[in-house]
Length: 422
Image 1 (cartoon, one colour):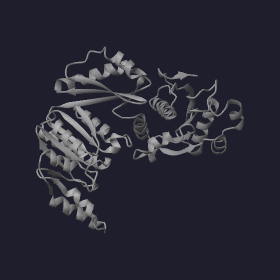
Image 2 (cartoon, rainbow, N blue to C red; image 1 turned 90 degrees about the vertical axis):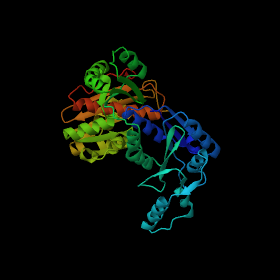
Image 3 (cartoon, rainbow, N blue to C red; image 1 turned 135 degrees about the vertical axis):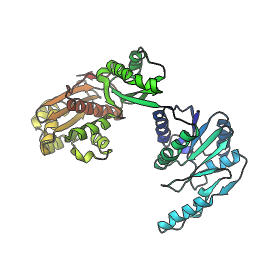
Image 4 (cartoon, rainbow, N blue to C red; image 1 turned 30 degrees about the vertical axis):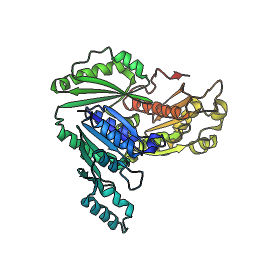
């Protein structure tokens, strides 16, 4: 089965918005063992949309079309599809009634422009959208089914999960037994990983892929068929042996997700004192429902006065060693943990740039400390990247990894190949 994606919209084509739908969709397919063959982005131009529908329908089995189903004049997906099939747009009475009921239930009158969203190509099969005003639809053209979806991310994702995936599973009989193993790494580059892992013998019907999402590299082992699935644990064990300390999670997409899982599992509590990361550690954790079970508080103590007043860091320590120092960050972690007697506390301080560095502490110098009820661990590193956002992101990852290792009974301070200890 050949699956392609057509993304529509001038704002996507020009880079005014990042197309997160396409990345999410590709990852969903990969989890099913399906690789997307091609992705095309087209602006809001009727002729271009019509042409690309006609062209790609000659080669693909399924094409998911994202966007262009709204009520405004630049939403042209339905009309372009009708033109591609040389047929008229016809009002779908069921969706027209759904739209009117949607507005009526909210005490509003449906704007005349919304009636456009019930106009579908004559041979289209309507697809319900329970969370928005744009219905989807599917149409057969040449060899391909074109499956039209709204561009609003939460509407798109629900339609893919509840309707698109069941459709392709039924239409193309995707019944082969499959299994996917994901291994998340940190601290080692993709090329180095490939050099080491490509030497491993991989049995037939098991494939290994890489997904780079800085600061992580995710390795995917996909097994197709019973024999491959039976061999997968042995292959996974050999891959893990090569990865060593670079392996930071199994089947969790981020280190934050791994920490969330471990803290809930072990019923431990956490406090945070963030300076250079500015609340980023806390923000990633509170994305997960249930984080209130372990996250007690986060103090963003950006200035020295906040460190001394809120965390009880001695002014003498800051004056002697500086805000970016092992001594200061250890005092920050201890102060944060003491407030509510948390099981653990993380603290960060650093020079994220682009200014503020010195010969002694250049941009990218960060200090991280982890405090427990019995010990404090800390490290000062230099992240050799001149990018403020990435320095903060990597600092968060190091902090998470320190906590992860402590929760697993390991030395919290690890070595990372691209990060220098100072």
